[in-house]
Length: 426
Image 1 (cartoon, rainbow, N blue to C red):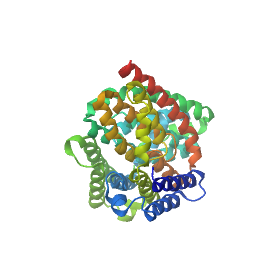
Image 2 (cartoon, one colour):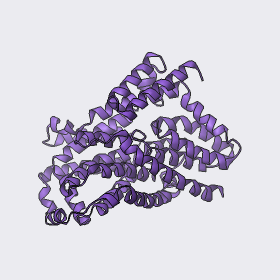
Image 3 (cartoon, one colour):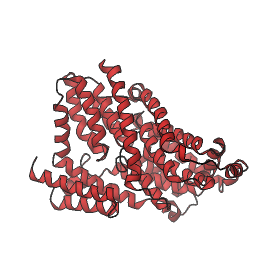
């Protein structure tokens, strides 16, 4: 690699260290790192802001913005209070039952929506129900972010890297259902068991608060029924457009912005109320992170790492598949999995055509999707959850998330390895 490549790595590692140690605010670290990358010409304005492979992923940024506005309008209806009471009553006030219910909802919704949209909708419910039952919200939020990443792996639309892989590999929605979804179900069962070990044993059931919850009527939480039906109608259309992306060919960001615009235009909610839930620091953090990672792509760092890992096992389909799974999981833990997959997918395409087998596509998808659980910045859903937690007075540190995420990633990726071996390589 060139001198510029090494300097870019040093800048990225320095920024990442500041984010991990929280010596400075993560937004300042990301913007500072992005600024230095531009200053040293590791990337340029054209590549940083307009390139689909090495620039800010505006689809992600505007998807988040649109969905945050929709959530802001929904919050005015009281529907999150309704769902919080409903979930607590179904769990009969028992903390771990409640966690399991929320995790199943999160994973299922993430398979149909993208995982970021799902956590935007589930997080407000989590805060409300935890407040009702006097439970710490952080374990629930951490588990939900991970469940969204696992559930999103099941379908073509569940996680952005899957869309890139499908486009490059000529894979369909049904291909993902057939090859990814069965293992995702197994992973969710294992993940719920891990959550019991990591969180569930420390929860304490409060019979008094549970009785109070059971006495509530969730229907009384709805403050504006007309606004609720308007909001749900728009949200249903947005979800339908997400699911029909392969047919309609509208980017999720366009759908989210259109939905947000219609909702603000046709309802009595003010603009100030609608944008009150927008997590501006989170959006700016993503922009800085995208520029830094894009610089690593521009200078050839990510491509060199990927090719070196794959070439080490060249000619051995079994080793190539296992190596790709492991490398994808490791790299997706520290860099956003979208530019990683965009960089890696052409290499995988060549390997598939050279006789490596389609199992390589599933190794790339599983590694990138599940590797995002390893650290607080490994996946978009994780970053959004941390932003929401901080905004609501329950900050989750980088290491508080990562100490659980590493365990979950090692276990889930470890289980995928024999699945790929037995189903495609045995």
